[in-house]
Image (cartoon, rainbow, N blue to C red):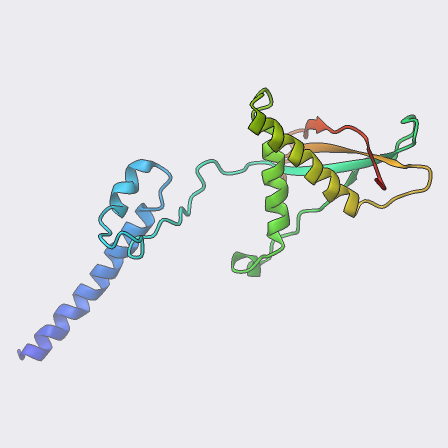
Length: 184
């Protein structure tokens, strides 16, 4: 057996083994349990190039969709329209696994709703400022997307959590906003 044949045989076994080990280390480095962070410490580059920190697995995955509904109201708040959805979640297609810029709106809505729902009793100035900003952001978001009707100068927003495809659970009505003017 020649030296060239021996080198080729070793490379045919070593390269796949090294790549498989690298793949396993990369996957383990993404695990949400911080105990697996030790795997990434073997990357001596200090940049995370060899074993990245992408976190494939969400630590607390979302199990419910959050929707903002609105209704129009008369000036004296005695007449209301039916509740209407502000933004419908787009059905997923295969291309969305690679490219889905429209998801940014859904993600922003989810983040703002989380700001409003979590820590309801927090009274720090930072929490209060975040909540006031979230209310303004949602009201402006709804104002830009609602369809005005004559005789209804006000609107009101409702935050609803719904499990999506599991129709056995009832929706959860989290927040009802104060009335706002359609045209401020």
